[in-house]
Image (tube, rainbow, N blue to C red):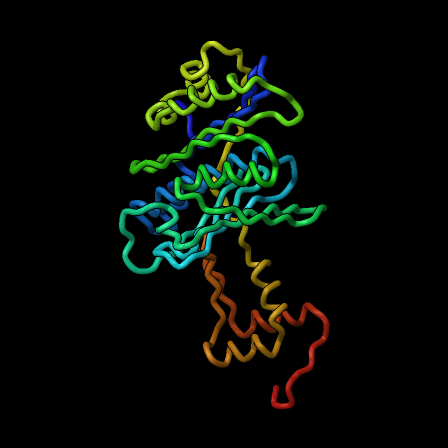
Length: 291
């Protein structure tokens, strides 16, 4: 394997087409190990991770892209978040028996939600995308067609040896192109294989697919698994609940434990911890029975 956990952008020198190739290994395995999943659920997670990373690289903003699906199927929740610095995390919740079926049947819904979440400025954008019977790649193509009006083609894959990846081709906005050229590039791109993505460099893949075209490669970007949970973020949630609610939970359970669904990190708070949390905020009303 020549490279993993890398996203590489490229452009065609004489055609208004750009593209990206992504290969995930360690980051994909980190998610799978924490989610304790197997088989088709892993494949779905891997494809969603590759797809979210490819989408995030087409958007110029400082923030994160969240791909989320909630349904009534065996995989009733699937969430992938990719930041603008290519940090990935993902979660999948399952119930009941997971049998071999399409993504739409696994998820038990007919749509997915894509959210763009800017960190500093700008409005949060959310789009609802029909979940295509052909799978996640076709669904994300539909997202570009509806929200960006950009002809886009995606190929996504995840294998049993914990490797996931994909490729994106997109017509550059504001440029005209002969239909035959676009169709020719798509037909050539569709011949990519799992083995090529896993064993060839991006330059070798592009030469194999498009050797008659001049292509410019950009510097690869590292992709990694990273969860953004923190004790501070949990503290903020407890403050939002309010002193009385937190004290009620403490009386019932003895302590407050919060588990991150993405990385399985546990944050524990005892009575002393909670008193310190609220002592550092605005004064609160103590109950008359408090001593």
